[in-house]
Image 1 (cartoon, rainbow, N blue to C red):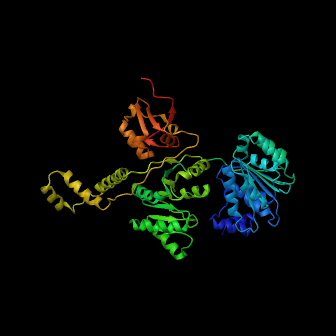
Image 2: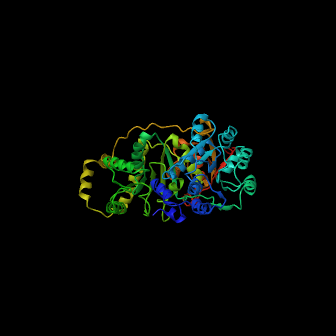
Image 3: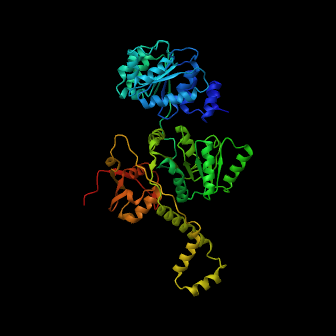
Length: 533
């Protein structure tokens, strides 16, 4: 059952939500929708990506009379990008409303397309204040019938200098309208606007805190779309997860990945809504019993899955909703365990990654694609751990004494024998990998030189702790996945060590908590430079 039904929304809305596989309201939706449905004015304080668009759009669509050819709903946004995003979200919700019309009005585009949309008599207009006022002055916009007004990201509109434009537009709308104001922060101007232009507004606040646990290591790999499967193979071979869930956004992609991984020799199976219940149960039982160690699923199929011991989560597709990202990665690191959450992204989806980071209030570490050498090195490390464990368990095992004696007579150097045994073991696991072309990620308002900026970090380890540079480099790789090439100069003094780190590595250390070196809790902080001799 779609839980939005509890908020008394129409079947047209719930059917549209089912279509895009959204079944549970986010906190801001759960609090704001009932108030807005009751025609209360609302001030909502919530971060980007919290689900605020649906929080104000659902009540707006419920109240509009689609038989009327006049503007009844107006949404003001600070940017063209947000205006287009809001339009797309409302179009998803309005899929089952007949005679629905919407127009998007923003600067930087010719008037022809926008004028064409306005001539179709839309019931909802989305846009930026500057272009809306321009269209008002041209006589193309009439807000005399607006009954539902939304100020989206009002604090951003204030920062961008739209205060006067906003007030001009507000004065042109009937006073008996309903107003919803959403903002990440509530500066004094927002409060003055609410007093002047809103009627006894109800305040809805979503606590601003991290939404993901510290024991989940979050990573993002940037790769071309056509190389995502090749990257998936490398990631699976690099980490060798005992249990991993892979999320895809569509049923077709789940089926495609299951077939691909099975052909590559992995124990993988899939879950999606088209599978019959009996088959779904068998797939889940296989995953629980470790007969299958890779489960590929859509979000709707993964609802209700609560299994301890899942070591990794891979977002093969980036989720459309930020809440869903949190739900996905929360399936690892359960019961006090640690886990890794990996997301595949293209250069075009960089902004979506930044939006998720803003939503969860954490940075996601950008990782280099594992090389063949990295994979081999990591596998040998895991092999070493298994061998040490097996040596302890087999101290009293005499089943192979005769064979060992015979081999010893043939070859006096044990290294030769060990190499031969390791080659026999590795022979079955050696494989070749498709080449993956690395992509560079352009960052807004930052040059490539800025991206490669280094920082000096101080850590409370030194000569007194008998720390050595090579040990520290290995430690940073094992605990933080910081590669040697991320590290520059290292200076070790009696109580402290100073590290030169590239930007991404520095950010990752800042969010690290409770990491220990031989029982000592580590503290990292940025300093201005290396200490003087």
